[in-house]
Length: 182
Image (cartoon, rainbow, N blue to C red; front, side, top):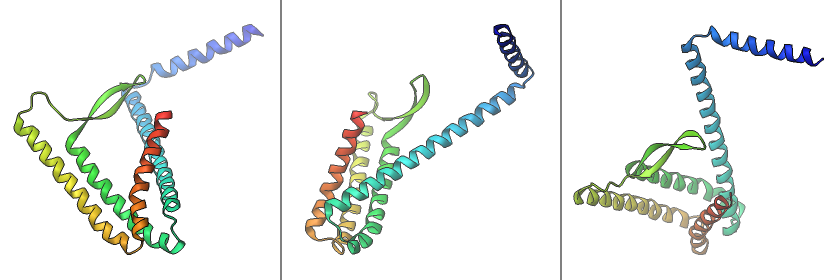
């Protein structure tokens, strides 16, 4: 019985080895690229699911904290979603301007990581330009916030509006606390 299992195992190993011997290296690369694309697609899907879950948590948190009525929620959320999308777009511009992607090894695999672009060999003019750009981007963010402040007042009371900004910060802190626990 043991000999049969050993012979079958040896046969399977031999078949697998012979199967790969005649393969074209291009085919191997193609298969590796396919696996890489599948992995990246799965990761992207996972990120999208996490993002959707996070947005649902944010909506529930803010709705509860503001004590929105059904009518207020119906009017508030489309405006808030636009507001949030504009803030995210502004932040993405900032990230592109001041961060660069670098390849690092993470858990034995190559990964990308965003790091801030600051060079020790920069001139004062380059540092000044960087700071001026940051100020401009912060001003853009403030413009978005001021514009939507006017829109939110059409739907929310002043008290609710104040709670909105507090709730956003509280939610961020909660998420950061959860991430630190992991």
